[in-house]
Image 1 (cartoon, helix red, strand yellow):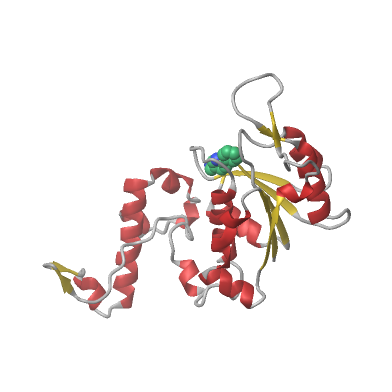
Image 2 (cartoon, helix red, strand yellow):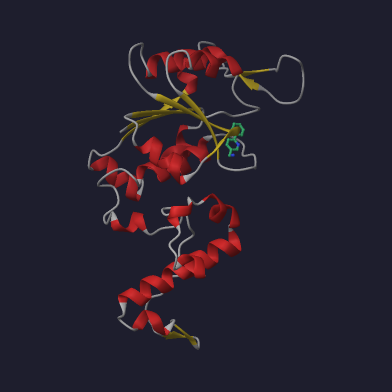
Length: 241
Ligand SMILES: NCc1ccc(-c2ccccc2)nc1
């Protein structure tokens, strides 16, 4: 997969060079290029914003630099999905992470100020699929932090990125539930013991206990996830929890 990020704060994306994603890049599983939007400005001050039509506070990102940047990063005829982090987007989910992990090319447009002139997305959508993504109902100062989250969630799903793919199966949201509590040595710590079942060696009963814990946690903390589960996702044993 190739990922391009267009931003006025390229250094914000430095963490993409670190650890898991850094290794994935070294192994050639992931290509990441970060571009400074100001490289597509032509005035002395490298201006990327201007006042909003219709008035109001703040500034809006000008369409021209974005148009030229997207023309360069995704030349005519090349295929890519444009992702625009915005509070007005579709809420990001693990299912969306899996969908994006199947793409060959992702281009991230990082907005700042009050956002990007709406015509940029409109025009881009005439030649590539565009997805506006929100991470939840809060506002950041720009899209860069959201890009770090999305790229991590997507990158770790790429084959070969995570050492043991097994670990992708049982994590929160992988099966639609929150994950069960985990423990490691010592068996007793500050007078708190690991649940004895986990030391029993009875893998069938351990699996059942973990499933019950995941169901109970999900019911308590995220009843919306439980309600969204397909009926066949719950076994008869699950229904007794
Ligand atoms: N829901 C996360 C999120 C994503 C992007 C932005 C944002 C804020 C200002 C300008 C451009 C994007 N804020 C929140």
